[in-house]
Length: 266
Image (cartoon, rainbow, N blue to C red):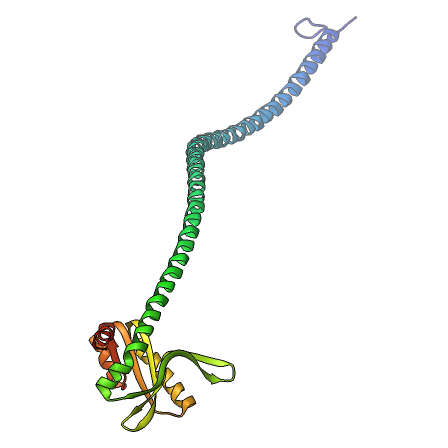
């Protein structure tokens, strides 16, 4: 016959109940441990979440900084775009200016060509004018020489008592073998009993450099002739200063009108 407990429960039932309670307690203990583990996991997750939120905050700050940088970049890009527009406009202006410059250069080149043609014509005309003037100067000079050659014998006899030996001529004197110097007036005379060489030069306008040049010619003629040289200058015009310089060098100066007076007195 089964035994009973004090509450009227048989030992088998009691054991069964105890077994059930033990199982339940064991289940509860396992669940508690799992709960504790879960709490630990939750704490770790919370910490991880906190770190994640911190990183997210930093990321948000970084994104904000990047957004500001993006705004600045966009503003800079806009400025560069405007600057590019201005540059393109300036380049266009320069291109137009270059076109105008090229057109102007072309015009100047054409003008230069015309100027060169005109200059060539003027140069040719100037050359012909100089030739004409040179011819005229020679004509005037030759006329003055001719008048001087005719009149000087009378003038030298009147002013210096000189007697002309032979005839005055325009000639070339040999200064060295095959080298000659042209003299406008050349001849011989007797002055105070001395035989002298008469050397003369005719200039339309007598200048200081002519006096200096004639002085050198005198020295060369004196050297090659070995004679005393009597120098005479004949001119249409001479300044008092140049005439005085010639006189100081022993040169007699006659003006063209003095030659004509001599003509009248012949």
